[in-house]
Amino acid sequence: MGLLTVTDTTLPNQEETVTESTEFEKNQKRYKELIASFPHEKGWRPKNPLIQYGGHWLMQPRIEGCMYAQEFFQARPTDLLLCSYPKTGTTWLKALTFAISNRSRFNDSTNPLLKRNPHELVPYIEIEFAFFPNVDALKDKENTLFATHLPHGLLPESVARSGCKMVYIWRDPKDTFISMWIFYQKQKTHDGPLNSLEESFDMFCRGLSSNGPYLDHVLTYWKAYQENPDQILFLKYEKMRADPLLYVKRLAEFMGYGFTAEEEKEGIVDKVVNLCSFDTLKNLESNQGEKNMENRPSSFANSAFFRKGEIGDWQNYLTPEMAARIDGLMVEKLKGSGLLEW
Ligand code: A3P
Image (cartoon, rainbow, N blue to C red; front, top):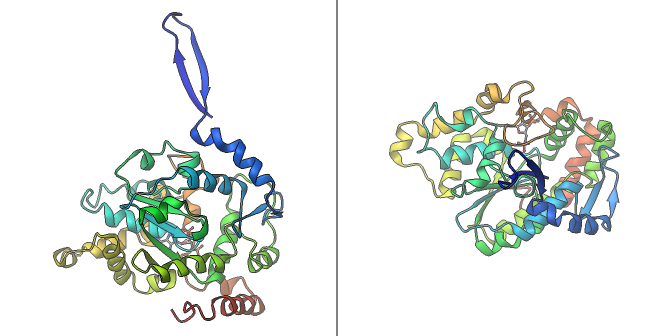
């Protein structure tokens, strides 16, 4: 509820506080009524259900935010939408796109990335746009960077209509699962205990995870990419980790912010890569300990977004049988799509 203080000048010294609903709150009741009729399943936190919407499983607030974005988010042709399944490299992508598009505005010591978590700089259409419309990035009409974890089929129509570009990042499902399960353990406020690794893993494989099924999420964007390769840049976390310089140049080119030969010679690409690297961001004061986002409440401290940033950490958690189950699913789901070889 937004709080608005109104002073009636005819009644000196009397202040009355009235509450003013946000646009989202005016519509929320309608969304809740609709959502109540959708299939519900126990979530990874059993008290926190996953709800089926558009063929995917989402948590209640995310569907409400999605419905609001579908109705009210007006994408512009110049916007860039960063799309990802959670825990596949979103934070990195937010930092990189921000650093690339703002590189002429800031120098090495003034870049906001040095003081703020990347999530504060690039708003989610189903989170900030709906629930926290007053964050700086949304009030700044020059900001063209937005993000979403929604599958392609749930994007607001304005995204397709505007023809705005999108970047999609995906990652090995085994590392994605582990990253997600450990991330949830770091949640500060929640609705009760988290399922065991084994139970959560089984649900993940059955498609029951936030925005899941994961591989279907990937396929929705892969299909869109194949239909419209100029509109979507498809990235893979592992490939970017192996050669960040190459992919940062490709990303900048795609965004219309390609590096000039001179910039390359001056080492500007390396500077962007270094500023956004896991080690740099993780070690910033703003991303340490219990520091929180400054622009909105979050049930995760900034540090939760930086764990190990490694490839293959799943080997420390999953049995060979579990790994074989996901690998089998990958083959089954992605076979014939071209993604397995990609
Ligand atoms: P791990 O949990 O495997 O370490 P998301 O940003 O989509 O939530 O994804 C989080 C994953 O990306 C985490 O993986 C996190 O450590 C890693 N990550 C965060 N910032 C990164 C960066 N700048 N470079 C590479 N990986 C990063």
